[in-house]
Image 1 (tube, rainbow, N blue to C red):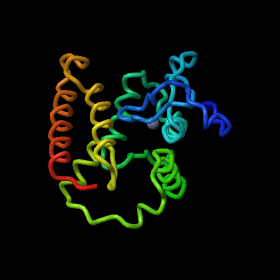
Image 2: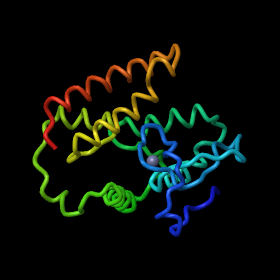
Image 3: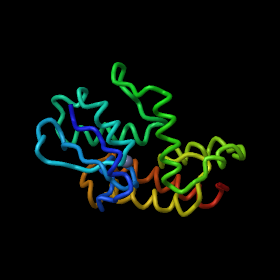
Length: 181
Ligand SMILES: [Zn+2]
């Protein structure tokens, strides 16, 4: 098993960004890159080091690229698609979501006063791996991080990345113009 995150390291920042595809949080938890590169490390936020650990068995036989592709699926799908048998218990996942909101400086009470949201806004947010409500600064930050990873310049020849890049641009454009968080 990969090592467990230590609670005591929480307040300190490692200075590394979370290595999970599409995640913009700080990566304060260390994990091996893959089963093949068990001595090389990468950094994740708490939610993603847990997701990484939970999927450790599933990653068997995968190289770093394949693991990254899995992460991208999990991040850019509607919600993380946990494989059966390695699934995160729903309660624990909800708790992590709440914690993530807490670390982002949101107040827990804020989620109770959420305005209804249009399906198109929701889809655009989901594509950026964001949830209503969210402010435009966060949308911008998330978009920039995702664009960096999907930009045609860094994904030479990847049709998939190009498609995603375009979709992200559309979603971002829509949100900036129409979304009221
Ligand atoms: Zn993360």
